[in-house]
Amino acid sequence: MSTPGTAMDSLSAALKCNIIPNQEYLLQGSVLDQYVEVLLHRLRGLCDNVDSGPESFHDHELCFTLRAANTGAPMVLPLRVRRALDVNDAPFQLRYVGQQELGDKNRPTVVRSSIDMACSSTIVEFLTELGCRLDFEYIARGYMFRKGRMKITVSKIFKMGGNKPGEGVEPISQSYLVELSVLAPSGQDAIGEDMRVFAEQLRPLVQLEKIDYKRLGNMM
Image (cartoon, rainbow, N blue to C red; front, side):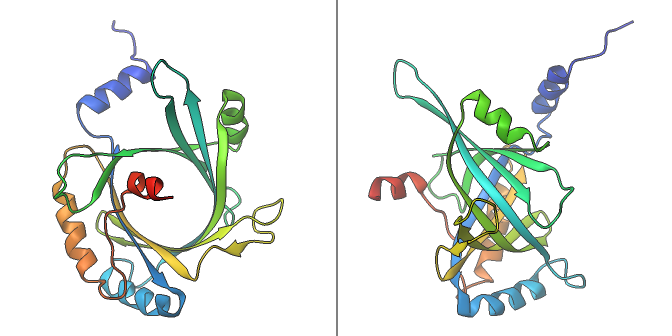
């Protein structure tokens, strides 16, 4: 009688079968406050959840880094924790987001490693004890739409002003962040073309494009 496999065995098998959605395809842009209602109206017409309308969200996100010193440059592991402020019993979400792949510059979207998992409210304490450092936190409030496998979010980003999430928040700009993304197993690059076609339908209200964060960091 064979012994049951461990959780690591199951994970390894799933990775070999390429069924885990561990890559994110991403386009980003922004829209000014005075045009966001027009954009939402257009998304209602283009997306799947027409009858029920978009899902609203009001989340608190904390961004941590775990730094490991080595002989060369220090290795940095970015981790994000997000929790819903409008749904009390919703689990916390832990997310790893990797650097974008260099690959083909003609790719229509950013492609980067991404792994999401639900967790308990003790995750912040666990990461702190693990040695993770809190770099920054913010509040995101907005709407989410679906179009097939694509997810579109329109978010107002607020910086924290008080000791508790939601207290004394202040918008960081006079615009909304717009993101078009798909989580999929690796190797499904054809998704990028579908995203490019969808993004074209949102012009000229919002121009969704690939953002090179490394280049932006060097400019600051």
